[in-house]
Figure: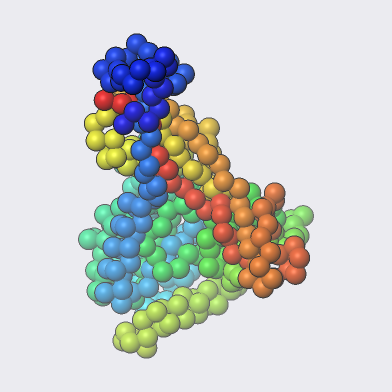
Amino acid sequence: MGRFHRHDGDTDGHHHHHDHDHDHGDHSGYATASERVVVLERIFDENDQMAAANRRDFDSAALTAINLMSSPGAGKTTVLRETLRRLEGRLRVGIVEGDIETSIDADRLAGFGAAISLINTSDGFGGECHLDAPMVRSALPRLPLADLDLLIIENVGNLVCPAEFDVGAHSQAMVYSVTEGEEKPLKYPVMFRSADLVIVNKIDLIPHLDYDLSLFYANLKAVNPGVAVIETSARTGQGIDEWCDWLLDRHRSLHASSPLGG
Amino acid sequence: MHELSICSSIVGIVKKHAAGREVRTVHVRIGAMRQIVPDTLTYCWSLVTESSELAGAELAIERIPAKIRCTNCGREQVLDELAMACQECTGSVDLVEGDEFMITSLDLAEV
């Protein structure tokens, strides 16, 4: 209290605690002085605590959760459809689908035996551009977690916002397509840095593009030197088996004792 | 526009610490490695607070540059552009500053 008071002319030791006509040494224009209170609280604390709760639920169900991120149109849903096709009967897969307006993506994924829980993010504050941990948590009761091996959280297509929010996944994977240009890792470093794996999709289109794959890799390594990379074409099927193997490996290393992962 | 939902989180933290007192300034620290646009954050802050008890409270943003430290030679370096490798020995690096996103303090009206 009174840290910023300056009692000008107050030489007789008399203190004007209740007299606010004097100069406070505060030129903010406020009638009373301000007190600075130290907070030092991380703004994502609440989200991160919920993410930790999600992760505990995933672990107790012995399932592996993957946060799948991309820009819009990178081919995330098509990659996912090809993934479900190949994993059917090998891993029990659940999908949390973050979709701004429609259930189009969920409809494209139906029919491969996966359990799908749709989050319509337009119900969020102002229409969300990402999934956060509470949104993912709200989707979990609609999924049979104990009967799943793999949960893929298909985030909203966006290279900025999803990277800031931990949703509780064990790994972050990203679908990038060569049609997006080589410079994307430098423009969206937070997402490219957060990824454990980058799927370089639409690789079959390179002959038709003025695209320098080695320049992309140089940019990617500048931002995230240790990242794993798989080149894919969801259209031709190239690399999708390798991506499925990566998922199986992740599941085995996380939950070695589970029936299908062991 | 994740800044909008971030502002809602900031409001929650601020209200908890202010405990009903008038908030004049919220001091926020943002590292250069966060994908948060200060102008957008300030704009969203005014939207989120305008009809609340926090109306008029200013958001003061302190930017922290990205700093890396080489795991091999220990050299520290502030980054002007993104290059997650040591300029000296090309060793791998840790990000030591630039990841911050926190409320550091509040200026509250004296009562």
